[in-house]
Length: 508
Image (cartoon, rainbow, N blue to C red; front, side, top):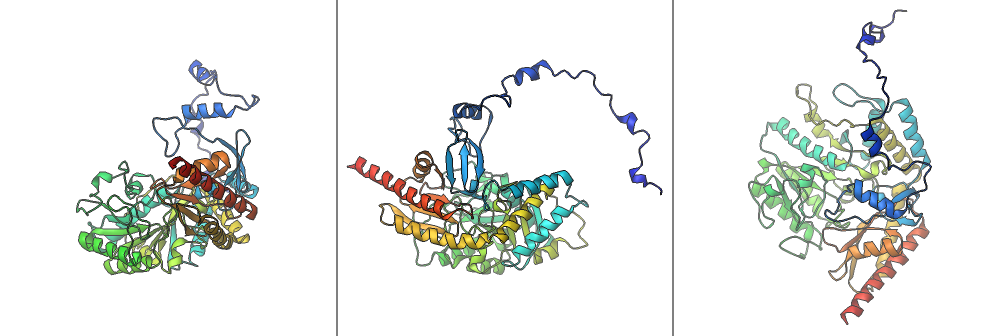
């Protein structure tokens, strides 16, 4: 048998190899820099030492600049619990970071990653290169998504949600340039007080009141008018609890119709020929699991179709079951043109995000006569280990019926929280769906204080809205035990009552 030339030994290959260095002694500078590293045999460092090393070496996401971070330093996790370096146990009511749908520490997930790393730890997914893990993962995602969004057809992988949003904006503009040679459809509309990510373009969509450090904020017009020079435009969110720079609280007979009219007026003002897409979270996440008025998204879909504007659903937080359906926008009976996803698609076991495209976009983007590629490159797009983790995560969610569990238990939890909290002064309502819930208070109660006291006094982890400090956010793992939910309800009721009583006694 003749050996393929591709695999024949190159006769000059050995000549190209550099000589092996005979001096294997590490430089003194390296030895000095590692002198303080603890060895595996040393006694475990104290929490105080971990915090010191944390502040010396690590920058956190959303790091409070100019101050030391007094961190809870975690060391292990299982099911719905974390343990810190002092072995203190914490009930996880935020699913890691709104991510871990199937619970922590599942050995079958680790086994899948291990098996794939042994087989093929990395392969490129670029130009004419592909691999079986990415193909199977894309097929699985499209198959699941078609149950709620039948038009979805193809998947593009990124490393996380922010990058997926960035890719969706790039692709929306490319779509219009290919469809009708438009060089002007560049502008993007989003909600005020939204969150779409931390990359430069995705953060430019985050018009957050009182914060001007995001992306292209300096290109935006003032929030009480619209500017022809703006690339990123915004409208109010259609919920009774609206916060922005010029109206603290606004309520209309039908906020859905009112904000849809605002969307249409903005498109007409800017010119449909200039608007590429409207991007929206089906439920606002970091703003506190705020649900839009039920009429808004059906109206928005019709408006986008009328004026030739793409609708991008940012399902990074709502996707893969958190709202009690596989995708959040499906609650409103419509389909987007692009679905952006991340977080729960892997349950946090490895980082992966992406976007799915509807059929009519694919028909334009992937014509045989298009010469130039979609120049949006990620080294780790479709990483084989991450793709295998996605498929195992989805298998577990199906086998254990976790989306239905989130729907049923989330509804029960919401009802119980309303019953237990509704008599407490300053409590307003519980927003959200499934296991994505927000506890809304008036301006007299700080959500940040509830968040801190639950962690410190009750060893329970929740999140809160940094936009307004009035909403406590909970997104527990879908397989959380009912007894743990009861512990949470008892604890947050006691915590809120203590805070309110302390404030009232202070005022008197």
